[in-house]
Amino acid sequence: MIVRIMGEGQVKVADSHFIELNKLDDELLAEMENGDTDGFRRTLGALLDAVRRLGDPLPDDALEPSELILPGPDATLEEVREMLSDDGLIPG
Image (cartoon, rainbow, N blue to C red; front, side, top):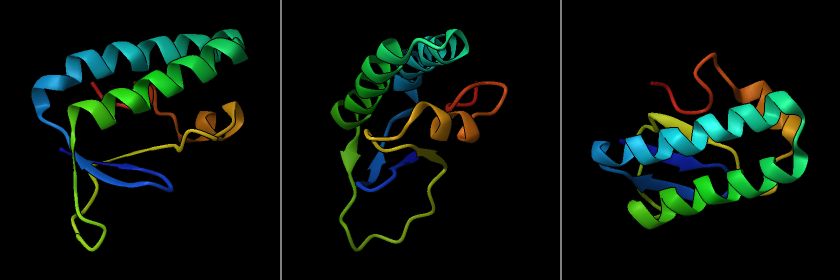
């Protein structure tokens, strides 16, 4: 799956890694629902770090459609709340 991190670029992540990513996404959703700003910042950073670590960056000039768009590391809790679906940032 092609994942875009806003402000950074695209990464190709194997489907097998989405179990780990979904755990972090669930944690992020819970922290947002509880208004835990510190936990939100920590878990958003961990989620983005995991995408970078587990994925292969695409060249800057690649024009692949992104199947998933994640906020950048400096996104606020409100900005991320606007991006959420019922499943969180990552469907499934």
